Image (tube, rainbow, N blue to C red; front, top):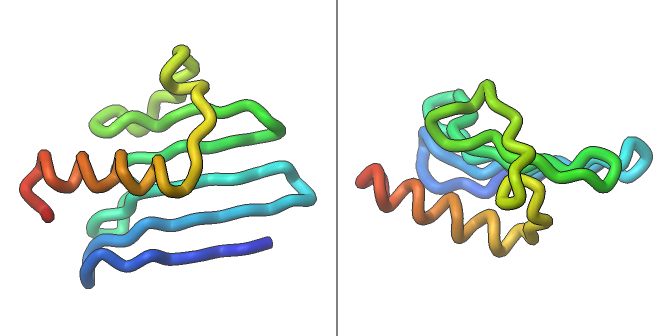
Length: 86
């Protein structure tokens, strides 16, 4: 199991979690102790927790798209820039 925290500032970070035994990889953008955006791969199947609709599991074509950490960081940066947080 691997857990990483990439700090943006005191209230914002990107959390990376990987568990090879369980086939789980997740990326989350966290602000004020709450996830505001995320992408998850469970057993080879990707889904997205869309910004503004976190309770949803987006299994659309876009939601199922496999993403690298670099791609997720680009998505997170775009959200933070749109919200004026960067």
